[in-house]
Image (cartoon, rainbow, N blue to C red; front, top):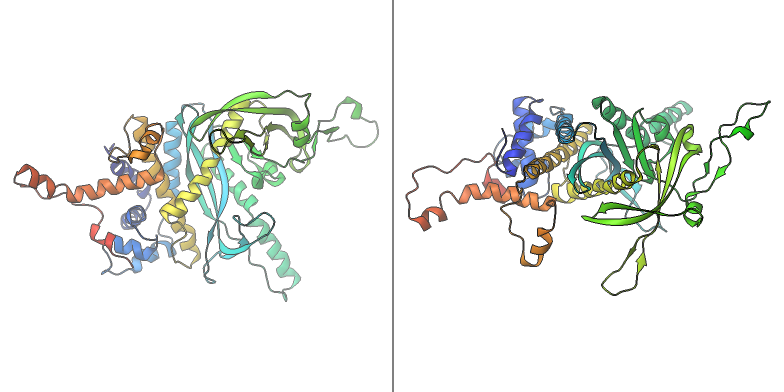
Length: 477
């Protein structure tokens, strides 16, 4: 049943996802997701219990929900993926962005916590921090006019293999090397692509990644039928296919021909003219100057995979009106599909930034990584459930937008942001959270306080009962 508000749409999607679990587990998970969105505190299980007004009840079932693996997090992502596919026209490719993130943790007994490189550290100094690593796949929901919202459809805890002690035997070291390769990000990314490809056998799939995922291992093991777009090094060594003059009578045939220009040499080559391509970024349409070369070979990917290289010239910008014109860094892209129009290649790569936005939202607004749990199932399932709820929240808003219904109709923008909000094509995650809080709280106070006082009418009906206990919102663990 289609609801008339974000909360109604969101609840119906959660009911669909929860139908794959037992009824009690589905209700508890639904309450936890609501608490992560409604509660003003960190997203710990203790706070979930308090927000739902169960602080005086037995809490063991709430923790065992994840430690005993009584929840299937894939049900949330299957629901999201089905809704995304239903929203796309037949024959349209589905675009996925992939990336990983670090959630800082200090506990030494928490599963998956290890010393890792700080991604926010300076380039000239490698800082190490303790934390957990997560891998995310996000799919694009097209909004129109070239814009899209990236929605998480796969979220996995990606720990590394524990190195054995210095007294380990050769057999133990060999086993650790195998485990290290099996748990690497490249292997996990390929497994994620396999899972998505098997669930969408009739869809054309386009995968987009940054430089960390543009590797020979991923390109060689990518499932057939998936086109890849990724960022590459500016000094990557490229080759033309072997031609007739490379054929010799003796020896095996050559796999690579003459050296091709590197991406940086292509950018500096004035004999190759630039082409102007339009794409949407940050809600506005921009013009980019690009160069490309098709039918090239890259040694890490092997001689069987033909790639095209696209160079995006630096774009100019000004810090303020009338200031000096500054330029950003150029970008170098690799694409395994020679038939994909260059406009679409550029637009799909710009969409990939939505994965970074999802990481920021789920960690800062939803509270993924706040939970104080230790076991391996809890650290694997609980973050995935919260990210799945975040994905369904956005789907509820996008479904309302497709029906030309404003999902944040209860919110009034401040005067200094009224013009900016009027020109936006989609709300922010913060607006969606404020909207569902306003919907939930207004049902609790408008029915029996000021409405009846101002009108003078006698309220002969009881107020509507809420699914979430509001008294727990002002209580913390």
